[in-house]
Length: 455
Ligand SMILES: *Cc1c(COP(=O)(O)O)cnc(C)c1O
Image 1 (cartoon, helix red, strand yellow):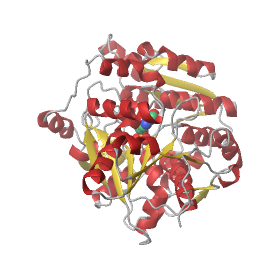
Image 2 (image 1 turned 90 degrees about the vertical axis):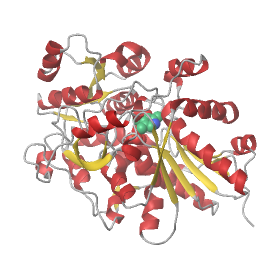
Image 3 (image 1 turned 135 degrees about the vertical axis):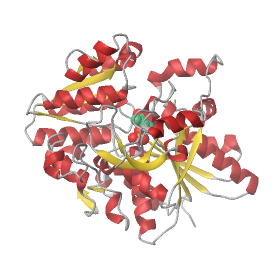
């Protein structure tokens, strides 16, 4: 007989994974290589090492090593908030009156409030190990900047964050959390970089964009030999570090001999979803098991569902390498939705390739439907979800409701990537009935795609 499943499945500290899982090593058809933005040839480790620290450049290009050791110093930091619990959503199941069994992996249990810390720690560690003095980065909504600030203060590294100007002004709390951890936060565009000065000269009143902040952060890292750039999503190295989510979830489920039928995650750049599915997809690619994987994206930024699979620039300034991915075009500016972490124009190359091969599904959902799922979830499960995370909740609920109709007892696993305490302005709009559902027209999508580079 099956053991009774507790509300929270905790792992022991000793069960914290010792290695990350490199999903690309399990893929018979690898994602296409990153291209150098000038030469358009596959980028080399030496070239990448000018932007990222060496060990991370190596991880970025490694598509053959299946498991990579997690350094002890990184594991020690992980122990402050990991292993993260896997929760059986008994209360949500009851509320939905569904025969489905719902589980979620909660990643919001740290001060930065999201899964981003899992990669921030690794990136800060390798920078320190290389003897660098600091790292630069950009942040939009602020989750990544917060996570990297925490990691840098732990390892005694300087952290320079370029924060999109409108967020800098509208989200003073996140900014102050970063400063508490010792980071310097500069509103972008700024006078401190050439590209920032150029943009300010042309558009003095601009409220900034993520693409511009990336370009400023990369330029700032080039100003000093002892700084490198760090990025919180999209990259292969970030997916690698985030595999800790899936590895822990699988260990917890295996303890109770539970096998999920459907695995669901929200997808911005694709790092939490890539991490959550990693060990399950690896099994499937080896022919050992079969799962359904669903990526959930905002209808306002429908990268997988309406984008194109092509080489594109990762940033608006076109200084970062090109990646073959599902993209809406690096010039596509999504509407000001309330899920800031999902407003990226592209999708990590690994998930793009898996989706292209038909191994993953994708769904686009509107933001009012997302917030109603968030509220329903908060009222019965207690945790106040980040708007990004609530995209996964929406589809998990939809799948559970389908089971109610068909009577199927499916097991659903989804990723709850973070908490929403800094997003209460969005919740306010929702409660006041002022939230709208913007869906880009076919023409807007076509305009974005028209800007794709021709190779
Ligand atoms: C950044 C963020 C996301 C989206 O990023 P991915 O790289 O797609 O995982 C999702 N949820 C939260 C809470 C975030 O902060």
